Length: 82
Image (cartoon, helix red, strand yellow):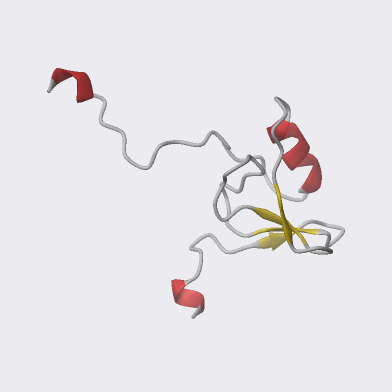
């Protein structure tokens, strides 16, 4: 089962209150998948303010800061040429 789970693994925040399910590109942005969860309520943590990345970093000071820019799954740079 572990082999078929989220490829990046998961990591708890230092205080154990939050769990990032996918590393290294975890995100607290609204609509992110699989996202970050509050381990006290098991609800998804979603920030919508402009400082979303800084707020997410504050939850996980033990992890390197990844690029949390949500990229489309498929990008065709020459899309307008067709």
